[in-house]
View (tube, helix red, strand yellow):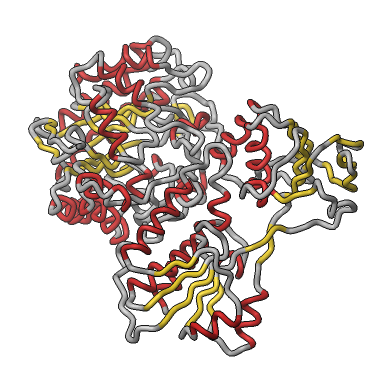
Length: 638
């Protein structure tokens, strides 16, 4: 059915087997000196094996001081060529085109990464950096232009099919082009012609140093989504100049660091949201256009192509979550797709800490170079208690290793607290991962027993060789006078549909769970107030999803009281102390102050001599990704 996505495409005389692209994403998988590692090679090779027609590697720095992160690839000197020559050979074996994105981060870095003050067109610091940048001299500009050309030449010598100039997301090329970051009054600032000069000189220098059939692409933020930044109309005026100077495709993205939710959108952003911007660019150029923007399903990608909005589609984080997305889509195995939920926790969270990027749903990401399939020396009968993401991950891996596995779940549904996390606005795709896990269990012929509470008698009757216990956690009930009143409920019960609320609600607890529960209720036209003891709310959420939930709460008119504690719950509301002291009327009070491990059954089983491995929240309360990884490793080790 997906004839658009799986048709070949030509760029500069080179044929892509399909329209599926892995866009450049910083992974922090290389050495600090920019040289290649086996982790970097194996990660990309997994995507090539997975069927992607073109892979664009991230941010090859043209200068060691042009790095925004510590462990980026580099082609700033000839000694780096041999390692990447081996890399390109491995990728090409699988029929994928391989493109090196080249860049200079400009002001979007700091001294901890590069050991000096950043360079920029103007002395205006990046909102995310503590360092004031140094305004570049004309000599530094000319040297940087030449460095781009030299880096492109090295990329060709290393066997890449082309390069992509990173002119998006607020990095140096983008900084020169935007009045948001460029306040110069010389030939590189002011007018549109002057602001384009740096990019055009780079393209010209590259073209003078590479062969005619070498691909030169350009990534651009179609709209920077900041006051005073470039808009789509200015971008459409710029692209023809880039085309005339000699680029071969346009990769349309959006945003700068200040609008980071446009660069890497969260679950609060719609799918394919930049496709309309790509269409506007496509309408004014003859060049191939690549679109990107929270596209996690081949059917969505095919629809974008069928609509004529782009020629190629970048899957981004979906390729991290499931490197076999193209193959599975082409074969119609949509139940086998593990879809990205745009949570930011594994990828962006690690990136911002200058750690290797992970995915909370794909424990193999970044470990492809050292994870092999395992087979147990002896098949055991394994009982898994709990069908949360950790328990199911353990069951899947244990079955793959050759064990006989049965899963027991006291509730009607799988997923545990993770499923409840899918209930609030914008979080529905979490269910996709639970469905993926259940589909894996089905393929492995694993028996799952729902509505079955595990008791000591049941365990004795089953007599397993080993128990993997993932019973999860239960809500904490704070010691507040009146907490036992009938109109006091937990956020868990609200999200599980076990109770309803009145029209006037107070949510006690402003962590991510409380914020999401409050927004869920407010989106259903309830009048909601959050009471939080800390100075702000949702501080345990990643930055972009946090922006999303705060925007949602503002739209839904959630009232937020911080630095405030509930000292008593009355029949008509709650009494508070702190920054806000008084009484808040409420029909329902919702508790969202955290959870605690459930261990009573495990303690009893251990006392009876059963061999039990405790995992997930029942062992230590944490995030879903931690449970998935623990379950994955546990299942492999049994």
